[in-house]
Image (tube, rainbow, N blue to C red; front, top):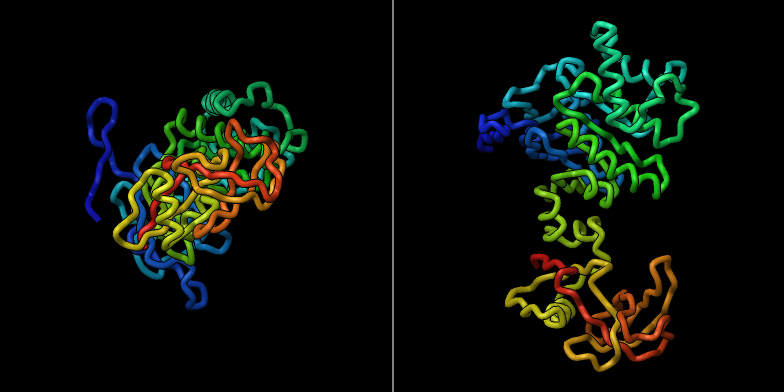
Length: 353
């Protein structure tokens, strides 16, 4: 893997952050992580995305030094971390439960790592105050964790993780214990806080929305392997295969003649080689029957959602597609109604065959 550097605002080169090269970790001889290679540049956030049991948490633990490597290397700023203990790597870890000390105030929780380093009290107090302002908890210094909401406790845990200005922050499913609404709101806040702090971070998650809200880059892990990695927008726009597309939130994956029909309906030429087509939930819109350049179909079922009606539509030689009614279509359409489906080219991805 070639050496890389990034450039600071004043034009000087800075070290290139975290690299994994061919990392393998096995438990009782069975690999949980196989030949994993990644690059996380300084100042960026990488989301490691995968289902339960995929190996993503093993990857994080290997980076932290909590799991010995069976093969491969982990480096930071081009320095090999082999043999470097956890507490000497300059990394901070934040877990989904926060692991706050219940008997300590918010301020003492946040300042705990600074006290371990024997940081002078005035410096500790100033750093704690700045971090509480950063995470939106000014005025909470004397509160105990038990008096806080789940989201507030996670903000305290994040402030504590940032207290010693780690060169890498490792976050293991930090929002998964929260409800969906709070998780969505805190994901945006987490992104803002990490960017404001200039923190290099590796986030492990199973939630694609969380990954996209927080990260600059995404690495998809499946069956112990990194199957795709790159800038978040690029990975989302071009999933490497059907399982990755489904993990990234594409609702339907088609191949063969069905894929060709959908491509043509989206105004894209059919491929000369076999391909698959993945459709996002927003890709299909229900339009009146007979609409040009749309797929003719019949409504199978209609269901109501918070965003309005959605219909399952049977399309000949394609299968069932999920679509929301566009203007001009009665809402909600009834089962058996003849309709057409328009495909937005921006809502599909072409997969290699």
